[in-house]
Image 1 (cartoon, rainbow, N blue to C red):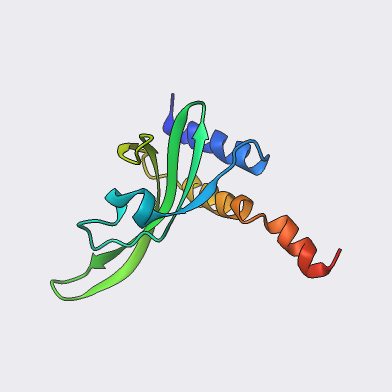
Image 2 (image 1 turned 60 degrees about the horizontal axis):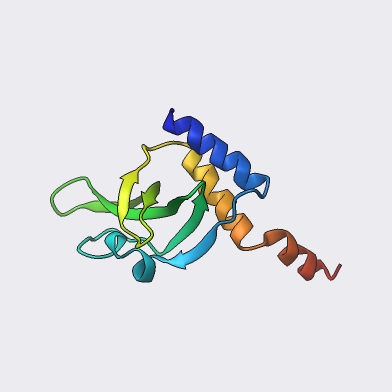
Length: 121
């Protein structure tokens, strides 16, 4: 199956509330993302889908324009991980990962209830 179609399906299921994403610390749960690297990953969203564990995150890294000149940029990634938090496979880059990460953050933060609470309804 095409990984892009899988990501699209995960996005749709997340938006419909069929997948629950949990926000966790990258450092404590997924050390492979933070150890022995200059890249920065703060937060990871995790979900179990059909018996498979997924880790969804934004990775910030230095893009060098010269030996001493760089700027920070980011990419969004999704990995299939073991129950111990070890990376088994990384999905190819996809524009849909941006939307999936935004949807996972929105759902895990319970934004609709936050907005209702702020409105006092």
